[in-house]
Length: 294
Image (tube, rainbow, N blue to C red; front, side):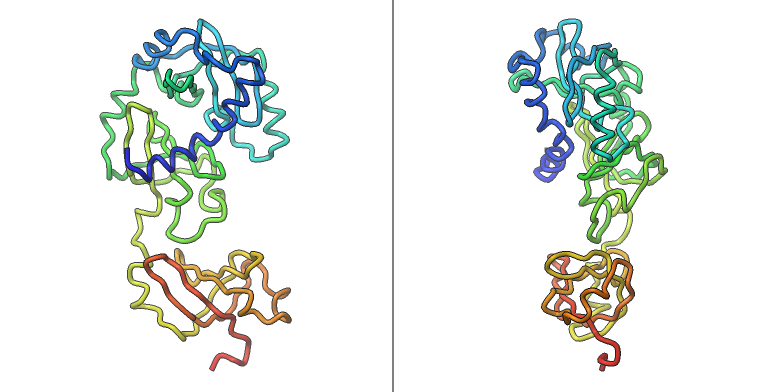
């Protein structure tokens, strides 16, 4: 697995940072799956199993039954599109005692980890290998957004769910993935990498478009004054977008105190380019006041 993919999927399974917490809450800190042979067989056969929800926390559900125990991350539940933390907690509590049809998507006995997915179970048993064999790295395919989280976007690409990490949504800065796509939206994506053995597909949206930073020095120069739009107000300054994928920072030292309260998101302004770092995809800007753009 590529190094950057490992980082992305660490984010995907960030919900599982609550994994140990969920187990400890039930007083079962070891032997996550009592029957690891059965768990491994279920995983290898890509089978579907019905397990009962016995506990929950803000990360997801603890399920058990038929000699198996495991965790279902919130992002792998069918109804996981609500970003309101209070409603999310309430919705998880409603699962108690319910039977869920699940697929085992992570089976690592050495880490006492068994991760299940309700979303993955929507694809029939035994179809994972066939579906993965049909996918090719670099291929551009159609998909549908199924879930949006702080770290990225899950996309159904025909029975397999992949992740667009937040860093692969746009060449520009992304405050939250929900600013780029919406749940149920049909989109085209490029397959970055495949990991059939771990049921993972890394996707990209931004790579369908040319990277505007590669030719930025042909279009913009230091000292140039250009129109921009405020995209975010932060403690140390203001981010402004010159064009799609190209944003720069106006440091607070470059903003007169009299102008700070006037700058709001989507405000149209003129900026002077102070510096360009194409390699790091960074641009330093200063605010040009009306009548001072000479």
